[in-house]
Each structure stands twice: as C-alpha cells, then as structure tokens.
Image (tube, rainbow, N blue to C red; front, side, top):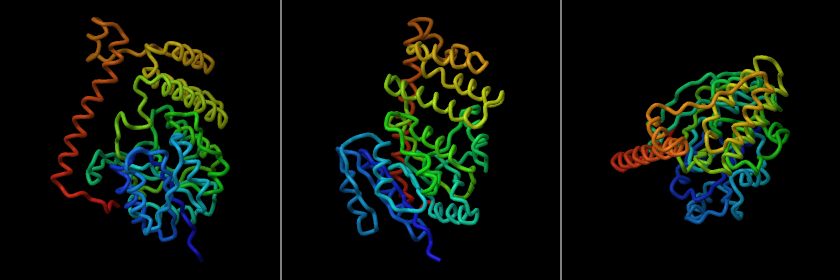
Length: 340
C-alpha cells in the first residue's frame, strides 16, 4: 500500500538565520512520502535565497506580500496535497523520526478524527541542549480534558508537535488572521473541537527555538497584541464551555483569566474589567495581580505603570545576555543538525 503523503507547511518571515536548519530537519524525516512547502511572507532579508537552495531536495517556495503568519499558513495549506498536515515554524526543528512515529500511530488508530501530539524541548542556539520537560498535556486525552488542563494549569503545546489529518484540518477551518498572537492556541482549540481526541506519541520530538521578544507569542506592551490575546482567551473559554459547561470547566476558565490578568494590569484596565465581568458570569472572582517583590520598590517610588515596564523590559535584557552567551558557545562547538 502507498504510504500517505505528509505536507510539512512552513510560514517564514525574515527567517534567514534559522530556516536552513529547519528545512534540513524537514528533509531528513525518515517518513519517505512528504512535501515541504515554505510560504515567504514578504521577508526583507535573505530568506528566499536560503529556501531556493533546497529546491533540489523537494522544497517548494511560495511568496506573498506580508500578511502575517496566520495568512501565510492558510496559503501553505491551500498549496498542499497531503493526507496529513505538519505545521512547522521557520526556526524550529523536527526530530528525524517525528513524522514516521506519528503517522504509524494514527494509521493504526484508523480514525481521521484523531490527532497526534508529541514531546517538545526548548533551546536557544544549540538543539543538543534542548530540555524536554513533560507536563500534564503530554498524554492521550479527550478534547475536553486537554483544554481543561491547558487552561487551568496555564500550559501549552508547541505548534510543531501536532500531526493532523487533512479531514480534521478542513473541518477546523482556516487560521484566524485577526490574531497577532496566540493564533496557534486558538487554532488548535478548533482542531480539538472537531476531533475525537489526542493520541500522545512520546518519542515524536520537536525542538522549539526560544525567540524571546522576537517571538509571535511575545505580548510585551503592544496594545494590538494585548487586544488579540484577550480575544483569543474569550474564544478559548467559549470553546471549552461548548464541550462541557460544568462547575469544573467554569473553574478552569476563571483560573485561566486569573493567570493571564497580569498581562493587562495596570495599563489596560478596560480589559481587566472585561475579564472580571467574565469571571463573575462564570461564578468566580478575579483579584488584581500582585507585583513581584523584586519590582515592588519600583512601584513604591514610580507607580504601577513603571513597575509593569520593568517586569517586561528587565527579563528581555537578561534574555538577550543568555542568547548572546549561547550563541558564543555555538561558535566554539560544531552545530548538530541531525537531531532525533
């Protein structure tokens, strides 16, 4: 029997520094029947030139004016033909047998409405140093239990961990181009809603490059990203309650709102009030976030807005130092491209 085609779909924007490693990991997949499609979303650097070097290895390049990652993903899916869909960000890496393990698992299950997930580890520049730390989402779960754990425990799964059938992808609908952040979180909620549950494949590994403030998921002080984040949260709550409206799921939604409230407080009190109102509708109550002790003196001297800025900016400085150090070590040690 012919092995099903897997489409590896990669949105790219100014990814010149990373995308060669990403494509190398896609090409190196032990699953033989695959197509690799990169949609360049109006990059201003040398991303297109790097991708073109992989044309002889079966990589297809599509270009479009800059429209955002969600739009690039929708374009990539429109150009694909695979029976299974592997979403992959342009700076992350797939373990060599990731697709083989997940396709074999889903084929044994025999349902196009099941989706596969796997373990993921985070790294800066050296994938060999990736740390794989299991969470309660690293399990085979029903859609309701998966979303409840995600929201109540403030967890997530990295985009590349999933393998989804074409049938399930079409049922979920396109990526939401309105969301500037957490578009993957919202999208996979819709995939879960259309699914019969998650099959966790522990050895199907993904290597997640931590991009810090350059990440799409980084909110910072951007009002547009703050608005998009709260919109995604409202959708998460509606999705979970559509599956099960119970005391347990309502408590999970309230906890979810509380866990994220610090991203809106004190600069976006309008969203804080919306969140508190939503919590009351769910039978709960939110409390204003406390400033961590190491920033409390800034609040005392300069006020809560300056303390919030310190909470955002100082970790970025520490992050930048860690990235420069890890990059320096990479120059000393040879890169490891054949991850597994």
